[in-house]
Image 1: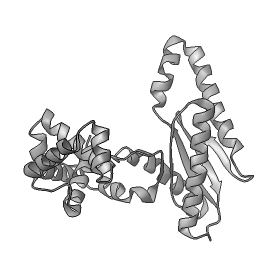
Image 2: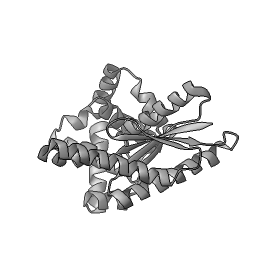
Image 3: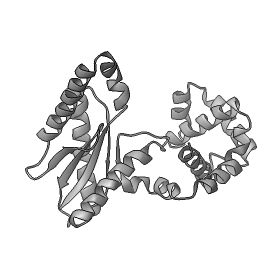
Length: 239
């Protein structure tokens, strides 16, 4: 049994643009060597029946052998650990940052294709998260995945309803939305959020109060925070 793990080079186009601009031939050679280096790094970490392959210009796929009879939590942790080793080794040997996404095990060839698609989706949906990591399982993004299938016009109306009071303030409103994102990314920790925003804690408190007055929703209250977080994700999906 195999599961697909997709590895994407972070900001690949920016990384290679300068080489391609200088010389088409030299740039293509550089890209070939870069991809080969990444494949070689990954290959060193593979078990005997694992497979690595290119999956587009900036992506690679590892078909990882697994034991589907293992408990799901143990299996996922093993995959996270394996992905972490790949990430660390690629960054160490090539200097490239990567984002890794993987899905669930599904039997058969069609199941392997589905696992690959889930890995791609995990990478794509990861951009919606205020709190960034480098490794994502598709199940970690179940909320974002569900919101992505809602029609865009429905999402747009929801964003207007929830964040309209902030967006009407233009630059000041964008500042408050950024404050919300950092607050959520910090798991509601005032000190951490204030540090990431280069603010005093009291200033952050004032901003959260301002958000409450403009939206009617309290970011420090879990039910209201869920609504605000959902609106932020919907807004990002529509962009």
